[in-house]
Amino acid sequence: MVYRPKPAFRTEPFGSVALPAILSSQRGLVLLITLAVISVLLALTFSLNRNVIRGYSSTRAVESRAVLDAMAESGIRLGMAVLIRDKAESEIDSVQECWADEACLKSLVRLLDFESGGIDLSIEDEQGKLDVNALVTGMNGTHFHPVAYTMWSRFLGERIRALDMDVDAEGILDALKDWMDSEDDNRITGAGGAESDWYMHLPQPYPCKNAPVDDIGELLRIRGMQPTIFYGKSGVDGIRPFVTASSPKGASGRFGRININTAKVEVLRVVLPETRVERAEQMAAYRMERSSNAFVHDLSDPLWYKRVPGLGDVTLPPDRIAYASDRFSITATARLDPLSRRITARVLREKQGGSGTWQCRVLSWELDR
Image 1 (spheres, rainbow, N blue to C red):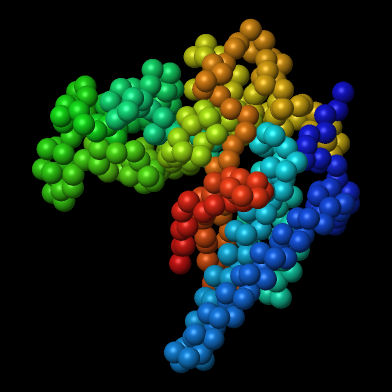
Image 2 (image 1 turned 180 degrees about the vertical axis):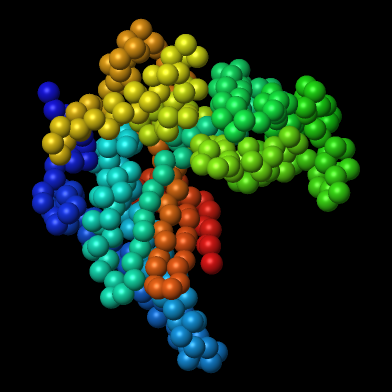
């Protein structure tokens, strides 16, 4: 039986790219996009007027940068509209949906119809990653969460081995716990832990944070963490693409859980029992299996992974996995030759208090010039 997920991925010819049903049969998304673009263009108009007053509008570079900013922001607004529409149509989030499909997003970007230049748009599920703040538990983060610690230990160990490095993964985790815990009288965890006394003796000293991680870039400040482990090298990924930092607030009970509908192979490997890690690639392939223009497998079934060959007798811990998310990263890169501008927005998809309608609230906004 062929499964057609919701939102429906029924497709119709559209040049070289299939046009999702949400474009051909529903106007709500197009209206959202239009309103988003109008708001951005109004902001651009005011921005350009200010530049005129200040005497800068005569320079082409200033004008191009303003246009690029508006184009990239339009892409972010489009991404938000896609996520809002998705929530109205589906209770899960998976790699089978439009927001996760490069071709589908490209077809939506075409609706923006820029006179020149273009936008590359991508959306990533933060729930499909290992959450660094879920590593500790207790009121002040003074204890390791036992399941999360095992997953992080396996994950770090695998990344370090893949990078052909001789580094103690457990030592890094000790230091990471000390970085996040508080009110523990500066007690050091294990042999690799570190509190402010250690950090304040560095050539460029800084105190231990003793609070949850706000941005994964903080991991580079933690004892034992090397840039190669974080960024990777020579075509081998470090930990950066697979980890996130969030808060229990607004997590809808999914804090620390990994969305197995979207997680990458490297993360699926540590969700699975150690004796079945080789099934992670099959698990990822199973999610993407198609027949013609439809996906074959229903990922809304919480036990879908048991139908993956070799996983029939495996039961994943329900308190560590999820099938939906409300935290995403949207990246829009605007191109106006020879210039480009990239914006990455981390957003929380949530209900508005009074109306009960869904919105995307921006948690962080990064502009790469």
